[in-house]
Each structure stands twice: as structure tokens, then as C-alpha cells.
Image (cartoon, rainbow, N blue to C red):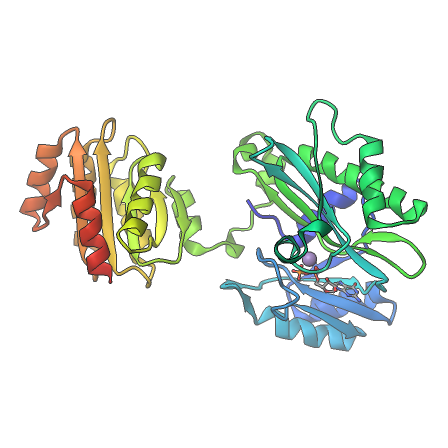
Length: 378
Ligand code: GDP
Ligand code: MN
């Protein structure tokens, strides 16, 4: 689950990381009032609060001198969509003077099976870009979960960012607090980009990004309560409500599969035959017809989808349940794209009967079904 910058800032500030004061506005008037209150007549920054990186490049971060300009900037930004997501709120904060920008982040790394602290003196820009162009500018350290980030380790990395002892110590302190925050909220990623030095030598975080591991939410209701469904892709919100595991992708073959492994294999095969999946969707083990109806509603709402592929391996899932779901769904909202169904396993015969009666045909061979889906989506 993504947090907004203003939510991530609150968490980092609670852990003692220095950040400029800030407040959130949902209207230009509110932005004006905050700029007047916090800005002291000087420059402020107005920042889009959306679950997307690169807001700066997209025009979602604007410098304003004074309250009137802040209101104007808020008017502009509140009307924007960034990477498909509408902006409902802006953060207003006094502008810091920047002497240097660096990057500090912690990400749970599968290879080392640990949280990895990454720092770079090349901050302010996407860390992916630094990794691609100047990888020698990124320094990494895997954190041993038994001991946490130790002070001498943090200081070592602090010196990779700043030659002076004062700034290196300040950065090290921030790294340790960031590591504590990662454990406190169950983050899979926590990032400060940029971490800046000001002309008077202070080290301050100007941006904050936290992604919380979804599996942590159940035991952290106070973090789960931070979810802002209005800022998420509507299809992903609908899928979560329906208890489906769904990830939107860019292709044209809508996939409805039972089981995550089979769903991955299906997407691989779609690619193998020259197509591209429009989504990952796992309807789960014991899928009742309603889940299939919900799944089809979500897939058909995507205008990119040119064909829909069902791939069902009936174990605990009963093929006749799925077939009934397909019939119910398509009688409620007629499909505008071809439907290819492959099912095999428990109650396969009943399923074929149900589908045939409703005018659909069903395949049992996975390759054949995927090939047809790719062809019809082309
Ligand atoms: P992002 O593009 O979504 O990561 O948004 P950021 O919050 O990182 O802002 C993008 C860039 O705007 C930063 O890298 C800075 O160069 C600039 N910026 C943000 N806040 C300030 C500020 O307080 N003062 C100044 N001078 N520039 C800022
Ligand atoms: Mn940033």
C-alpha cells in the first residue's frame, strides 16, 4: 500500500527526522492560508499528493513566492492528473534553500533477504536513472535484522554523502531513524529523495515516500487506516473489495485465472504466443460465481482489453461455479470482446454443459486457448 508524502512525512517526523513544517490543502484557499501561516511571506513549495514518483518532472511540484502565488499553483496542480491519477490534495511547505541533494532509501531486497540501505550523493533525480547511468554512485548495505542498522555502519555511509563530520553524522542519524521507521510501519520501501544540505549546513529531508507491505496491514490497523482509496486506480480498489488479487498491466488480453502460479504461467504463455496480458488476476481457490462476476466487471471496464481469457484448473475450484459466474456476468453486462474459456478438472463436464447451453464453447488445452486469445486480441 502506498502512502502519500504527507503521511510518510508524519511518520518520519515522529521518528525524529528533520523536515520543514508542512500542511495539506484540498483547495487553493486552504493553500493560500497555509502559505501565509508557514511561509512567513517568503517562498513556499506546493506539491501534488499522488501515488506517483517524478511529480517534479510532471509539473506537480511548484515554487511560489507568497500566499497568492501558492493559491495559483494549487489551482493548477489540483486540476492535474499525474500518471493517470487525479490530484485531490497538495502539500504546502516553506521552500528550503538547497546546497546539495542526495538520496537515502531502504528497500526490502529479495536477493539478500534483508532490508537494504541505499544512499547516493546523486539525489533529486530518479534513483533508477542513477542506477542505470552511474551505478558507482550508489552505495548499499544489507541490514542484519538481528542488530538493526548499527551506528558505525550508518556513519560509514554518511561519509559517502558528505565529507564533513557534522553533515555525515547528521545523515547517519537520519539513516538510523529511517531504519527504525521501516520496522515500525512494516514498510517494503522508505525513501528520502532529496535529502538536502542547506547553505548553513543543516541536513533536511525534503521528500518522503513509504510503501507498506500489504501483509503487514492486518496487524497494524493504524497504518491500514491511512489508505486513501480515492487516490488508487479504481480497478484495484474494486478488486480488493471483491477479494481478488489484481494488478493492472498494459496489454490487451484480459486474464482471469485461479491460482497465482497458474496466473503467472498464463501471462508467460500469452507473451510466448506474441500477446500481452492486460492484467494479472487471481480469483483464488474456492471461487464462487460472484467472484467471477466481479472479476469480469473489472476486466471489461478496461478499454484496452480486446479479448478475455479464462484459464481454470479445477481442484478446490469447481469448474461449474466458474461457468455459472460467466453466464451470470455476461447476461448482466453483455461482452463487447471475444471470450475464450479453458477449463479442466473438477466438474469440467458440468461446466462445459452450462457454457454450451449459454452459447459459449470451452477448451481444455491451455496452449490452444492462449493462442486463440492472442489471435483474437490482435
Ligand atoms: P518528486 O519529483 O515526486 O520526487 O518530488 P520532490 O519532492 O522530490 O521534488 C522534486 C524536486 O523539487 C526536488 O528534487 C527539488 O529539486 C525541488 N524541491 C522540492 N522541495 C524544494 C524546496 O523546498 N526548495 C527548493 N529550492 N526546491 C525544492
Ligand atoms: Mn522526490
